[in-house]
Image (cartoon, rainbow, N blue to C red; front, top):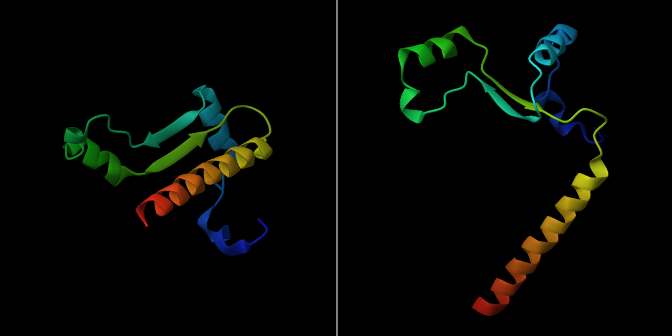
Length: 97
């Protein structure tokens, strides 16, 4: 990180190799995963879900595609998105005022 502002927001696992091996063993496809996962909101208050939260861990995990991340593509997409949003905001500002 160039600016260390958010350096304390992220931590590694003490047993990272074991965690990575356990995730690889499940062969997950790239997506966002939650543990403890609940598919229906009405089940959030169930005793089984509350027990999962008590037992821990509660995790949000993002599994990316295999390979080195290519940040240039994402930066380009973000810049195009920022340009689109700015253009729409400018258009609305001109039309409203």
